[in-house]
Image (cartoon, rainbow, N blue to C red; front, side, top):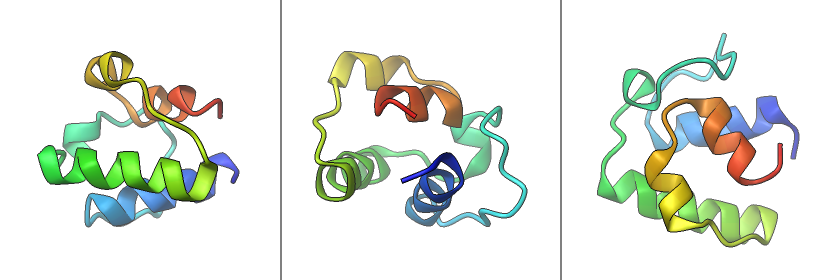
Length: 73
């Protein structure tokens, strides 16, 4: 998965429009980043990328690029 596809997947979780996302956007500004979104994100990373997300690092993520960095993108 490349970054644009990753951003599109995250936008889908956040119920947001993925067009024009650069990664610099604050997660909370893109969509509704709540507990359900966090669970959906963790599940997407597990199923699509085969990775486990570190909860402490996820808690510290502020931008889409921060989320991408968590999974090595």
